[in-house]
Length: 210
Ligand code: ADP
Ligand code: ADP
Ligand code: ZN
Image 1 (cartoon, rainbow, N blue to C red):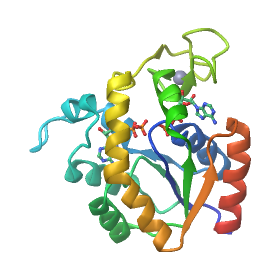
Image 2: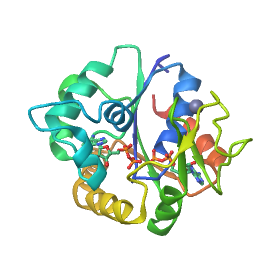
Image 3: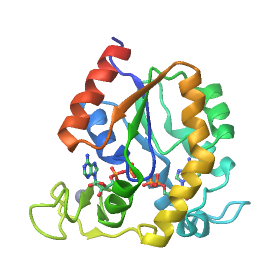
Image 4: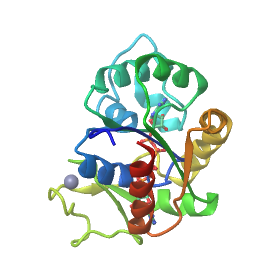
């Protein structure tokens, strides 16, 4: 197997992509490239398409040129785990032009579980680590285990915006999943298991594929 694989992690909002990407990045010593975190760090960046903030707070996709540029700059030639991109067919085509994927893994989770996960999600304000008020509590309430940062609720993790993000996923991002399925490269993982069991399956899948 190549030492530093190019891994794509797909799945609906709340499927566990961020949580599992941290494991993948550690295990294979590769960077975690996530458009969501990059956009959150640049919410008020002026672009000719406006700032990312208004799109993100409404649960809509940020315009392609903005995210494409983030990805083009972030993908190096020493492997990566990509999370949150591509989210539509145009992004799929752009990605195919700039890199070659070694493994494409889908985390599958039912809709009702996604809503519970997202509305209970807490994230570290400093390092971006993910927690959950019920399923993945930190040692000390409100404090990040990794860095001591403050745990906050994302503005788009409220029930209404979660519903809109899931709608956008079904309409615009499910065709992306079908694209990779039809290409015969999609590996599906049961994302509804406990985090450690998901990770066991994901690691085994990556090791078999690349
Ligand atoms: P995504 O990046 O796909 O939106 P996250 O990794 O942020 O998803 O996970 C969403 C929420 O669900 C977080 O609060 C996280 O702690 C929790 N979570 C992640 N994986 C699991 C799991 N296997 N079982 C239960 N909760 C999980
Ligand atoms: P999730 O937890 O839903 O997987 P992310 O952190 O990946 O959320 O994304 C948060 C928001 O950032 C999205 O709702 C969207 O507004 C924007 N975003 C992230 N990735 C993309 C992308 N590839 N294309 C367009 N917008 C994106
Ligand atoms: Zn932290």
